Image 1 (spheres, rainbow, N blue to C red):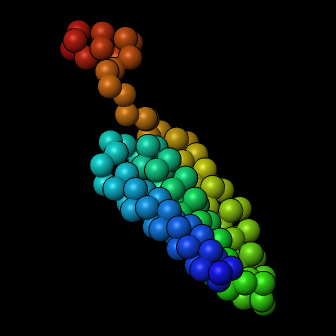
Image 2: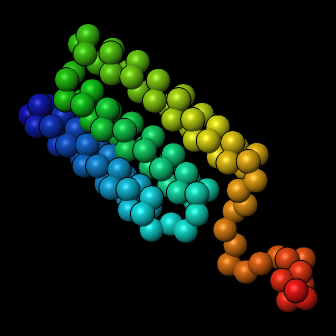
Image 3: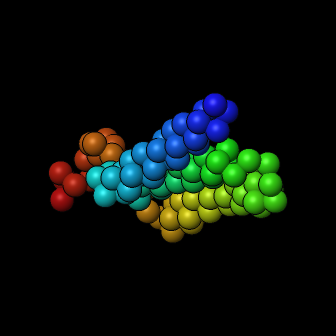
Length: 114
């Protein structure tokens, strides 16, 4: 009975992780600018990989494999948001402005007076 519950929980976690990964992939394609794409990729990638790893941990039970998966999970939890932040900060430092629905008032007057 316990193995059936563990199977159901692990497959639910793996399915939720896959959903996050697919949602992040769609966000990378559909979102309008680099910063919103970073947001979609950074959050859904970390959450999706985390859920998949936790699902595999539940499936494996407490073994040496679970300890290795915990280390991988901790590595992903630290590196993925840090890398996303570093890339977004580098893009902003390079002068890439975020996408806006309408232009700010100071740029509208410059473009209309030319």
